[in-house]
Every structure is written in C-alpha cells, then in structure tokens.
Length: 101
Image 1 (cartoon, rainbow, N blue to C red):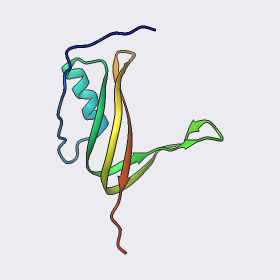
Image 2 (image 1 turned 60 degrees about the horizontal axis):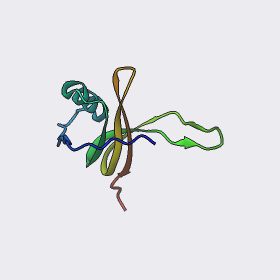
Image 3 (image 1 turned 90 degrees about the horizontal axis):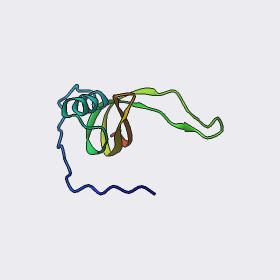
Image 4 (image 1 turned 90 degrees about the vertical axis):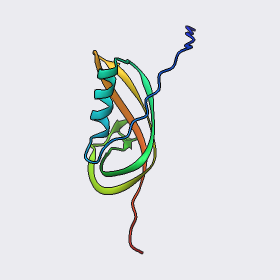
C-alpha cells in the first residue's frame, strides 16, 4: 500500500451563473487553477440535465437522455481527475422536479 498524507488543502466555493454548463465550468476551473484531482459537492437548481443510467444486463451505460427542467439538484457529488492531460469530470446527482398534483 502506498500512502501520502497531505497537510495543505485548497478549497474552491463556486457559484455558477444561469446558463453555465456545470461540467464545462468545472473543467475550466481545473485548467485555470492547475489542479489535477478533486472532489465536487453541490446543490441548487438546473435548467436541464443529461441523464445516463447503467444497464446491468449489458454491463454498459445506456445512452444519455437530455431532460428539460427546471430540476432541484438535491445532491451532487463527483470527482475531477486528469486523463491524458485534460480534466475529466464525473458527477452523480439526485434530481427532483415539481409537478402539479
């Protein structure tokens, strides 16, 4: 096992403006601030979402679907990693939509 202890932690508090893409904004932040890995947590409201689900029988992701909101983003968690020198963002979210009735 290889263990590295960090004693210095950088934190960014980010508020996106209406119309900003969550993934693209986080990738841009990673490039601008020159960090290679991190955790993401968030809450809020989004106008649309691209949602993909896992197909256990095929052991593969189903094609992402574009859904129009607005949605309440009750939970958002994920990671930012570096793949082939570019930031890669993977997010898991719980969404809720208000409906009549």
